[in-house]
Length: 252
Image 1: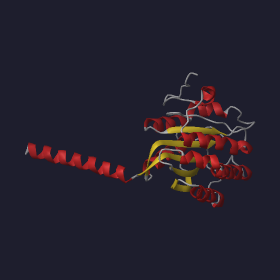
Image 2: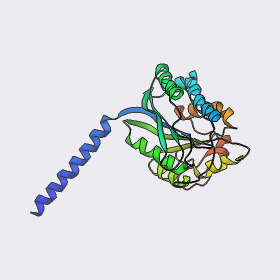
Image 3: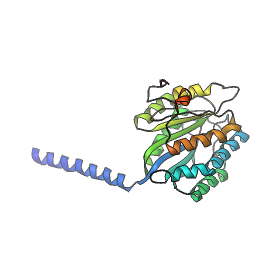
Image 4: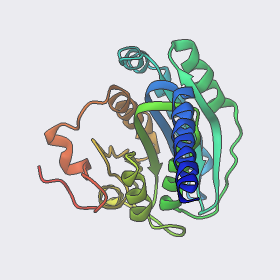
């Protein structure tokens, strides 16, 4: 009886391993899984919203982005775009798809330009947005060498899971969280909040935008660095880097 139970348990464990392996093999391999998490909260007015959407679309179309993708070992990435606000308000605007060519980029950019705004308010839940990104990365159909959440925002936490808790959970699963704080006269030190509470994981960094009108330049530089997988230069670490989940700055 005991031997029979042990045999059944062994066979069940083997079946689970084979099932997991089969699922992993079925996933399409890419150099990078990148989810763009853009602020859709009520503090983002109509003009700023368009600057943000169009900034992403314009940056993606920049030839240096396509070149960075082609130069990867596999020459393709998986990309998604989500807008977020409150603790349960995260809306995929452009679902996951493989990007390997200029035509793929153009189709993705057109989605960003054509889809109407889905969120008009609802709070600012940075940590909850990060956890949505983690779930989306875990449930998509791709297997990337690197997994990155790219989160932009114009304010700190107001509700939902604390940003640092969301960041820590992402880092614990091998996911990098990068930040793009949008600075304003009301929040001139938002980059410090992002540095201490949002970014984390291997090679994490933050690039601030000096207002929404500077968004295109910031996101272009950020996308190229993320896709190419370049390490943060020593001169930028004071802006950017958190080694793991603890929220401590990495010494220069």
